[in-house]
Amino acid sequence: MMRKLFLPSAGALYLNRPSKRRHVFNQAVDKFERYALPGYKYVIAHLYDKYRRNLTISTIAQTGYTLHGFLIFLQETGISDFETISRKDIANYIDHEQERGLAINSVSSHLQTVYAFLYYLVDNEVVSPDLIDKKIRVKLPEVLPRAIPTEDLKGILAVVTSVRDRALILILLHTGMRIGELLQLKITDIILPERKILLFIGEKNLHGRVVYYNREAEEALNKWLAARDKNSDYLFYGYSWRELSYAAAWKIMKKIIQKAGLEQKGYSLHSLRHTFATNMINAGLRLEVLQKLLGHLNIEMTLRYAKIADGTKEEAYFKAMAVIEKGENHEYDRVNPELQAVFEEKELFRADD
Image (cartoon, rainbow, N blue to C red; front, side, top):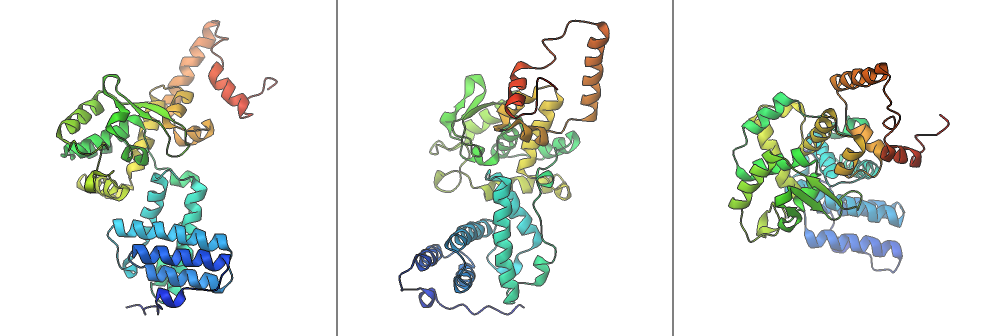
């Protein structure tokens, strides 16, 4: 049993002398007292420690904001005792922040703030040093999950018995939507006759776009529409007909993965988006079209995101070489005009190269 950190009351920490730093600290104390999330007193003590060490206003404010979100995540995943936090919980938190559509540098910044808090708890013997022994580091090539192989995907779909869960999984798989975008989706955003979904404001890039779904997803969607409660405006809803939370959606996916016996593979909800991107590019979809469907502002992100299979590269090479060897006129097709414009804008293509 770890020694409990002595926690003075928030009132004892409340600072009355006027200053901007004190005002920011007092606001944070008020917020944590008001929501009373599990472990909030530890956060208040951590913030007070930063205040005593004369850290900047922005540091105190950012720490309070990030740790408030961290406590909400822990509460939604059923963790109420800091002594039970594991390295896997930290990994799930990273996944949660990515699914919210945060830029990778923001995810990394949030993770650093959480680790600073955990170091504070270790120093005060609240949690075990083992928790920070091997820190999880966020690196872009490692953060993006790999596509789910066909055999595993069949295994996942085979165990889905819930009408709602099947619709949720198939829509993510066949549209490439981010989970945050799907959870905000309302019935009025779906154009059923045209099998398309309107995303008026992209979660990550603040640009609207249109995504489409196939016949398999359409069948699952129609079954869910017939069974769902009509009191909610959201396609997938939770308590009081509000939008389904990320934690609830992740529990759905986690249960399905476990039922399929694939819990050791590291799949997540985001894996479905990556699977969509990989499958589409390997089926011959033009890269700039995939960029639009995924909602990427930069085509470089799409290039990193979608992994082209060796078989696809081989097929594309011999198909192109056959055209060249025949001596056919293919000047217009040498560079797609739309893609060339993108390359020129990004300085990836130059006329004199």
